[in-house]
Amino acid sequence: MQTLRSRKTRVKQNRSSVTIQDVAVAAGVSVSTVSRVLNDKDDVAPGTLARVRTVIDNL
Image (cartoon, one colour):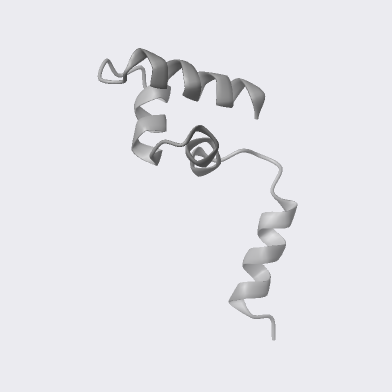
């Protein structure tokens, strides 16, 4: 029987799309911050906004 750990590893290796968590880690911000950027909220600092958008464009 396959363990949950091996299944998660297999799924992660086969994943080709980028997640919001991937963007957050790469940009050095929280998932909530990435969500606010994606939803065009006004409460994101301009520098953070630019950094997150750059990461999104590059991933």
